[in-house]
Image (cartoon, one colour):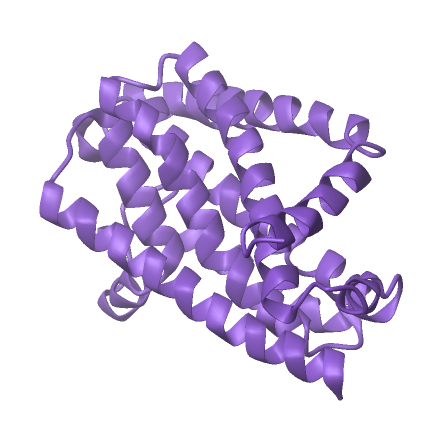
Length: 258
């Protein structure tokens, strides 16, 4: 088999597994963006707009919607790259079964990461479609918010999968969600500009991958694209994803062969 075909075998396994459970996820993938955007973009947004405190001078729906798109990608990535990865080592031991075939560690990592990106893309398509239906996409640049959202997820899936490969107890994911994912969701520019934070927290927010993803998606949906700034966001997120892949190959190999 070619180097490309081997990871696709791993991807095929995860796809076949998902075919058994997709009904439990497709409903939430549609309902969640409708409820979030209805409550925050329309409900809360009407109050923000009437008060005259529109961030960036745009309707609050237009401001918050791309932030919710990036945040949803982050949250799905954190879920897909934590319990399923640890479970494949400890509970189902699927990774060990895969490595007993001609598949190598790189194939196992790449194939599972490819599946995660496909999941992120599917959910992001739905989310972006709901945003467009609510009138939150104001430019043809908005279509590029889809790969941008997937890139945000990739910046989380690879490092978190690498971390999950080192864990034997799912309690290890609680502090990650409580002290990393949740604070980023609340304070990385999704709901209000980070410039309103105290200066130390503002600079801390600028260092988070979610802020880069939120700002990139927002520029694209608003049509206010600054090329160098956008390329900086992309480079930052790509660096995290690439670093995570390198780390994941090491932690997977250590777990599979020791």
